[in-house]
Amino acid sequence: DIQMTQSPSSLSASVGDRVTITCRASQSISSYLNWYQQKPGKAPKLLIYAASSLQSGVPSRFSGSGSGTDFTLTISSLQPEDFATYYCQQSYSTPVTFGPGTKVDIK
Amino acid sequence: QVQLVQSGAEVKKPGASVKVSCKASGYTFTSYDINWVRQATGQGLEWMGWMNPNSGNTGYAQKFQGRVTMTRNTSISTAYMELSSLRSEDTAVYYCARRPVRGVSRMDVWGQGTTVTVSS
Image (tube, rainbow over all chains, first blue to last red; front, side):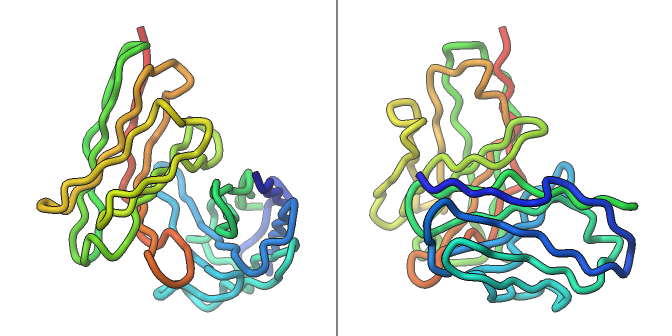
């Protein structure tokens, strides 16, 4: 199975900050990497697919980059509604695996 | 609008089975696989498997092989996930999510989640 790791596991940031979250795969997954946002008590929401494609309806302050084993999710200017947990997920091979999550909270 | 609506919360005893439903609307049911993902309280996301509503083909995570069954009723655009031999560690929120049959693999619409509690 492909193992996914994320860093940091949590971070504190202020509204307006630029935030970067890193995801690493245990082997190359090309660009088969998706990012999800999850708020407490809610289902995950797709933000980015295929490493860098913005899901329809997602604000443009979210962006993704990377390929191979190293990926990043960037929020260019953090908004109050962005405080949540973010998960990466590889779709390169079965079983699908998720990273452990990065919790973004208010400084 | 496109949505997946799941059945309500369940409380089960150890050793029992649970069957969760996921009703699709707003899109062609057979054009998207249905995946199941679970999340224990305070924990991360764990993928359980997928089902193709058109063919009925399935693929399960090895961890759940022999205990999980994913089925569908295309006449009512509903997918089902049944988990047997329940133990306390199966207490979690269970989500269904659709994934395009063709094109880039991603789970773009999710159900609201079904809480399953396993307790004696």
